[in-house]
Amino acid sequence: MANERWEQQVRDAVARAEEELHRAVTYINNQVVPEVRRNGSEALRFAASELQKLAQLMDDHRAAGQGQASAGESKDKDKTKP
Image 1 (tube, one colour):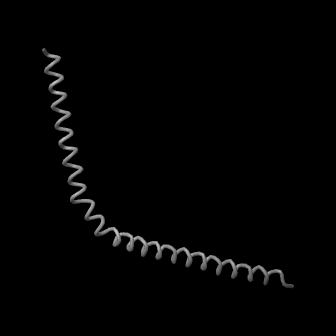
Image 2 (cartoon, rainbow, N blue to C red):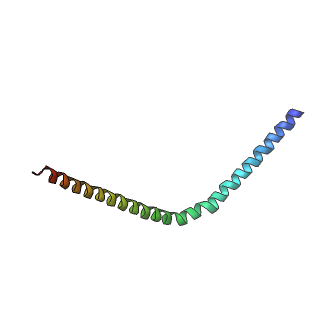
């Protein structure tokens, strides 16, 4: 008899879990997915803008490094002159 009660409790818990899972899936499909579709392109544009800024910073840093290397090379050439 205790075993039957335990099995019934497990069945009830599984049924509640399935109901909650169904509610969660319904919520995601009805609320989250449409919002992502509406704002997805905006998020991609923002990410692209930030990546563009990062690329510019990298280019600026590389150019500054090359400028310093060139200046260092000309100083070294001056030292070798008699």
